Image (cartoon, rainbow, N blue to C red; front, side, top):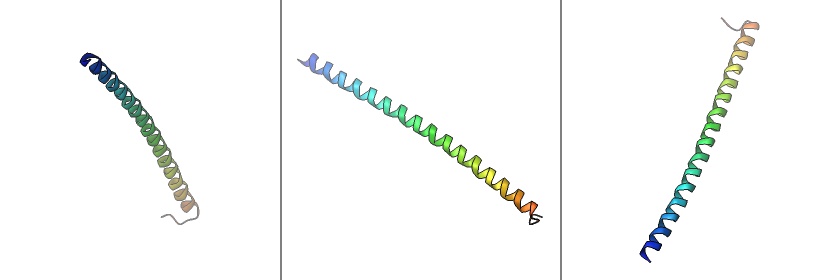
Length: 63
């Protein structure tokens, strides 16, 4: 009986470990996607700033 209980407990622990590993992997993927989105947003912001500076220069507002 004790051996069977220990085996069942071990199986449950292994299942929990696998679930946690899967959750961690999903979190990692989500983090990577968020980082990619942040990088894209930063690039878009930089392009917008460059366009603004160029337009200001064309209009003679830049020094």
